[in-house]
Image 1: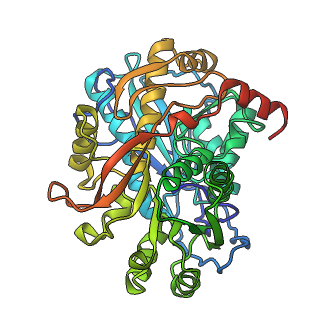
Image 2: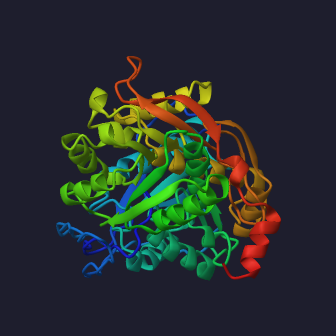
Length: 463
């Protein structure tokens, strides 16, 4: 899942960043085959706030958090050039609150690259140290947490997975001239009107999701009307609008029979399920994810929702989403994917095995997002031969990494978007995997990226 639109989780008091040194040596590669004991410190920013009201069709539930007591970081360095025996990199995600169950999948992705590099000889002859920080799903905490990482000596930041938190982090990055690698930000305007040179984006914009959905669903001859069922997060509004704009161009006969946006932290879908089924749609486009996905599936199964309507979903065939279901996961769902862990390539097999060996879990899409963002940062620092911010940015803009888990990856210099592909498949059960996977996968998405001229025109128009 990705970003909340205006949702904030009740915060934990106090912030901790402690610099831990792990001796060793190594050099990076594009696939992970080794693991070691993590070198990282988890911190939580100090604040006491309450959640704002979100405009949704269903009230948003809240989650209280325990109180923790920690100390302030002792480092006062503000340089973005590494000094001493380690290179420190900040990693930000929601370690507490409603989305905390997803955090190990994200942190584990960054830790895999760190372990690999440290085992193989280090980066520029130094060990990598991660400073893991909790944004508590609250964008108001992001500037404080980011400054604490910078003060502790971080040369760059990986994160955050929620779009609202990342928007705050992107603003902070421009003000503080710090490189930020965005694993999952999907907001188009962050490449356009809000763009700044310090931020690099891993996953496709949400408008790409909308176009992939439109073209794949338009090819289904038995789909004549569609209902849209999404969480109240900004990416889902973009996907909805882009989907219908594209569908009206390629198959205008398909009808829109309604839309509902549930609370971002919703767990009770009984009433909404009844309303959705009353529309008698040929296909329901379901954009529910994260911790809300299991209760949605439970409600859908009790209502036989997936038997009464075709369903198309985004991302929810990864290790996190399917873990609690095993072979009870619903089959026949059409799915968009950004990093299928079962891809039959040496690089993905090594990545999947390494994560499973490290955590006992199977990777999620966000594992791959944090892994790729960390890998790209490491390779850019290697190419630059320094952690100097401007030189690393220049290296990133001309970087190509061969044979990653997603194939060959490079960035555009004009919008800092990685050329990450997508896949389209159908959920199924395979005896080769303990979790549901997708069959009949099609690689797609790259054909829908905006051109340089389109990006610059949108930026000039203030879009």
